[in-house]
Length: 489
Image (cartoon, rainbow, N blue to C red; front, side, top):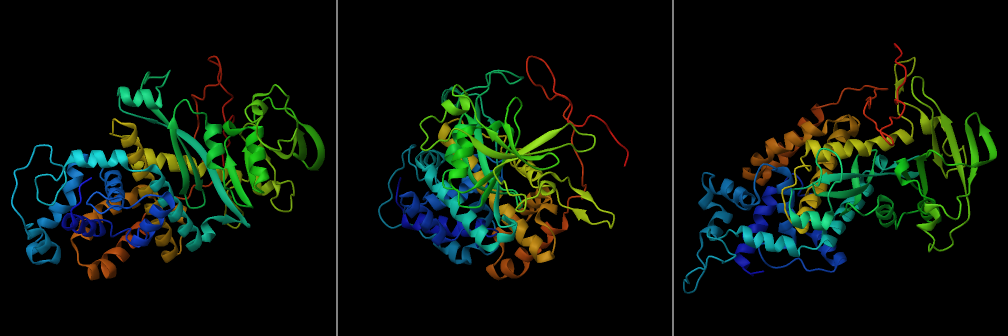
């Protein structure tokens, strides 16, 4: 990439103006730590990695704008301000570079606006941007969030995590189909699709780690990579699709814990009964089991695992069971595992059971894909898709962080705030943040943004459920409905 100190200085200043809502999170020192951890250099040009992160967030925020228009959007808004030529940034832009003027080639990456860059230069920089830099940036931000808001990460001494996956529909392009694979059934047959797996903090809906892989990559293989490096007393909530003997042992050998719904057809031997529907069971899979063969090279893999099985049935719902390696009922009781959100006789709202917190990550995927627009990815290369997804995840984390701070300032729960309206308020105030003075931003606009975010509350509806009438099982058979009988309250 080209080097231009004047252009780099202008773009760095525009980036700091454009990200004023997140400037206290995305500090220069944070970019430096991420670059050092990833083993890369930030660069000394206009399209350095810090500015590329800014452009990735801008692309996620302005999903209707093309990548070419994003390169000039903030600059032209500032250029149209009254008195722009008298500002320090305006005077810098007005200066002409010294030296003999040369004729430009049509392939010149500097663009034609003096200080702008071309879309081709942005595309080339996006191809070379290392994904490790994005991952370390996300990891460092999540560590800062944990240090500042530990009460929204931990539950009874456990660091609560939720893990699940989703599929992203991509543009019809041969390059994407070759790299990620295509769907094989459904209405969008032969459409390129990517598989995404995320590990998040469900009490605040803040992402911690994620991985984007081809559709052919199994979720359990991706989960093994994401769960490497768990800390002691981490508690991971998973869907029954992650039921795997090796994965359970991998979590347990790191002195961490898990909670998962019992998979159909699994047989266990009862060792000790702890109460009604609560028992310690021993699971010994057969040697030919796929769960064992997938992890046959795993060190110290035991022949069996002692797990706690909590069987329950909520009135009107089909029977179910939760499996965990927290065998001591004094640490987490059966009621705390499976309780539904409801109201007691005094009118106080009881929080949902621990395992039902897993559904928060389903809400996260809905907010990311539908509300924020990640389902409409526009790139037609694998590198462009990785860039767009990373920008969306980072924007979602920063927006959620703002919502947590707004909730603490106004004394409400973060999950009671509407993400859709918070995202909308952020887009509405973006232009005012870009054009205002630093004093006006710090004293007026940022507190006003937090106040407006806190005003949009989601109605409290304990015990609400969503029917799934088209929940197919195998060979055109249907599962028994989740809620079989409707009772009047």
